[in-house]
Image 1: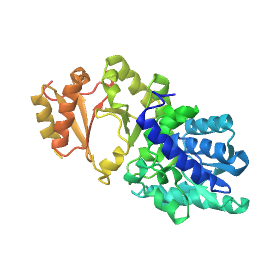
Image 2: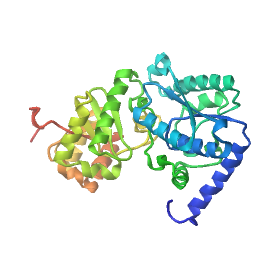
Image 3: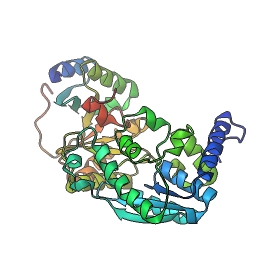
Image 4: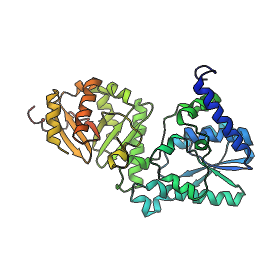
Length: 284
Length: 74
């Protein structure tokens, strides 16, 4: 448990959680789009606690843009908290609108995901479909939200105003291991808009990030794809620690082993959505 | 974007660099990169890049054995 139980921040988060519990209790059964990230893991665990395992189905949409490490985290959480999981393949890569990687790429991905999950929900008589959108997400550039809204997907975490920080706090309180996991958006987010999304490029990025994790990079990490150049973002507070001859060489070799010819470390450190800024669709 | 202008600005801070712009990103090859471990120097370099329109500044991790040409003026 973090801090003291009387912390105003925790009390506020608990009040929001109480509203979430009340909302969930009013549902007959729910299908959750489940990635195993901080938000959907928390929502799934609360849903199971409220509705019981028989009335909650967590569906993982698997595709080349879904990191293997994230899949492992999802399965581990599900097993520990009694979350029923169904895995389905999604085929957003086959959609030329997605593969072309426009600024609203996420819309096409989520359209595919929610179409597949909507079919599953209808077949199983599940009336309510949920995603893990949180209150912070509402302030960011998230084209994928529209796809969910068009298909009647509910976002109860955002509905009750839970922020990412609060979800982490409540997750820790419930013993959900994802409370401390870094955010892990899909691998396509490492490719600048307009750069075609291919399986080979996604695998290259995933190999590079895996190699850097093995080197000891903790917390937020992104390998941004810029053709033959990889731009590595590590937490800003850790940039200085990587600027030694030995660690720079290790970082370069790790990333080059994934197939990049050139490697650069971003001197600003990790920023969520930094490629949005480069593309001019978000502010620096 | 001006690679040369950023090189001048960095040079004025004592950072000898060769800058290559990739869109709105600047990638720098720096001889004495160790100075960038100082967060104050690093922040100043990033700020200089931002003033010239670059949204970020990245330090290229060079292969010492690659036999690249030395930086101009180095």
